[in-house]
Length: 344
Image: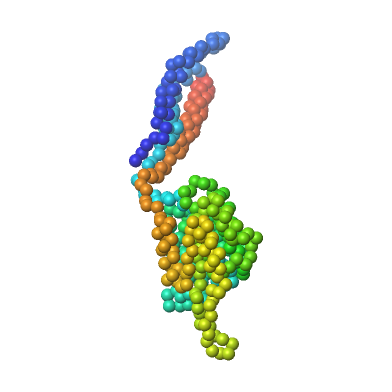
C-alpha cells in the first residue's frame, strides 16, 4: 500500500502561480536609443521561433521539477503487509560459569561423554533459540565476570558467542557475586522500560573469588526487581580410576554451594534447580520456558519504507537539465547574433 506521510505538503503545488499573480510586475527602464544605418544586424530579434520553443520546453520542465519537489516533501512511503511481532519486553541475562571445574566430563551428549560446558552450550543454545521477543544478554564468569553480549534481540549472535566460550577464559576460580552484580548494573543501565527482569545463573561450584559477596549482590538484584534463577550443574557421582589401578566412585559436585544458590533464588523471587545430567538440564530449561513464557505474537506492526528520495532525485535531475537548457538558449542567441552581424 502506498501513502503520503505529510499529504498537506501538496497544498504547496500552486505556490509559484500565486507568487506570480501577487507579486508586482517588473517595470522596465527605457534605455537610450542607438542610431544604426540598417536593421539587418538585428534580424535575430525577430527570428525567435527556435528560442521560444526552448523556452516552452523549459517551462514544462520547471513545472515537473516543482511537482516532484513537492511530492518529495510530502514523503511518499510504501506500507508493507501486517506482521506478527512477539515482543515481551523482558530483559533476560544468562550468566555461565567458565571456571576450571566446568571441565569435568560427567555429562553425556548423544552417546559420548562431554564436559559440563559443552552440555551447557547445547542445551542453553536451544533455550536461546526459543526466546523470540526477549532481549537476551550473556555474562561469562570465572575468577572475573565479563559482559560478552549486551541485551539484544539478536539471538543468533548470543548463541554464537556462547559457543565460542571456553573453559578458563575468565580464570580458574568462581566469582558468583561479581556475575550477579554485573547483571544488575547492565539491567539497571538499560532502564526500567522492560516489565520483566530475569537472570539465569549456571555454576558448578561455590563463590571462591571476586569482590562482592553473592548475598549482597542478591540484595542489589532484589532492589531493582531482578529475578534470579540459579542452576547447580554437575553429577552426584562419577567413576574414576584410582592410583592403585582400580576404579572408585567420587562426587564431582562436592564443591557446589547449593545452600547459597537456593538463598539467592529465594531472596529475588526465583528458584534453584539442580542439573545432574543432560536430560535434567534440558528439563530445567523447559521449566524456565513455562515460568517465563515467551510472548504471544501481537499483530499490528506494518513495515514502512520511505521513498521520498526518488522524486527528490528526479527534481534535482530536472533542475540540472533546466540549467543546461538556459545555457544552451543563451548560446544559441549569442551564436545567431554573431552570424547575422557578420553577414551584415
